[in-house]
Image (cartoon, rainbow, N blue to C red):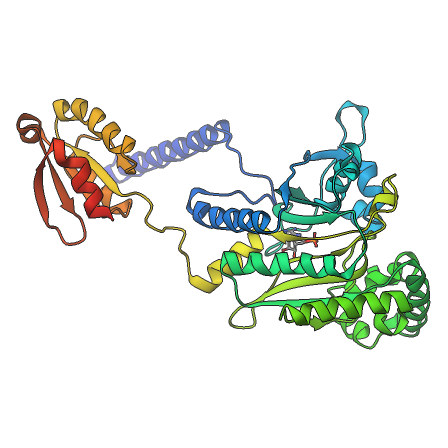
Length: 451
Ligand code: AMP
């Protein structure tokens, strides 16, 4: 066979082998099925721990100062609870229904209705009124996951239930949110406020709105065309530009309030002024849920480059208890979107999630040092010193690299010589200065250096 032909054949068989190899690799990859988190579910990763802690601490501090007590209701609720209280828009579009077991259950989309349900179920009306409760947990909405809108997200909420429908409680609710923003370190918060009146004002206002929207029907989006018949108030809530424009010219709620609702709102504003809490009245603010009446408000974070984030909101919900089978019970509250508040905090201060946490990295050299090291680490820990180690690694350079990554200031180096001399090297990783100290003085010396 001529050499040319021989080498061509060789090439051909080589290509065949490579192709076969690739095919097998693809097959193998297919066999190793891997899983991803479900679309729209945002998970909390270790580097975010700092922010979540910060949020939770501010929630607790607010609760302690204003005497709110914690309640954590179940994540799964009877669908009826929300069907009765939230309105068709949310129920039909945003709820996660669970079908197993023949019951009609849902993953809770918000925390107020469950808290009200618990108030009834556990007879909280027998306690001194109002009852102040707070919660912190995951909520689920079948949203179209886009920037900042998740299908599982966390909310912290504060509710004042029972007592009188005094405007002082609306103001105290808002004050609670204001203090939270202060404790968590968020200054650039803007509050929008409105009153949507009571049932009788609502009839009056709805009539005026329907007349107005009918005259602008052509400009409304498809959804709002439907809302015009089903729930005209929600047209004011539509996020589409064309509808927002129409909403701007709509008749305003405040003009349609009855005298009692008008007085209530005036009192809320006076209290806020007394408390020096700034607000902006937004005539288009309705908040989407059926259970709200009178005062409603939303909080926004305003960052650089026109960044605007809805970080929370709330209002009065005097009719909710009746809607879910209880007696008329005045109530008001607010909830905060945890991921959104964290996003705002990050936007403000840059990512501090990688903040230094551990104080000391323990480095060992050799088997004997590894064994003795176990006890030294425990001695440090019981003295309240945070220690990071990597006892499974034997190489000194690898351990030093890890110490660098852990962003610790001090490394403790413990090798054969130190075992023999009952000493340890304390090295400052920032300036490279190191000293040898006896083991008996290790804890004290480390404590002095990490102060
Ligand atoms: P709402 O219960 O709709 O009034 O929402 C209160 C706050 O929760 C909002 O201002 C947002 O900060 C947050 N929030 C609501 N829906 C979502 C979502 N799908 N994903 C993330 N955060 C949300």
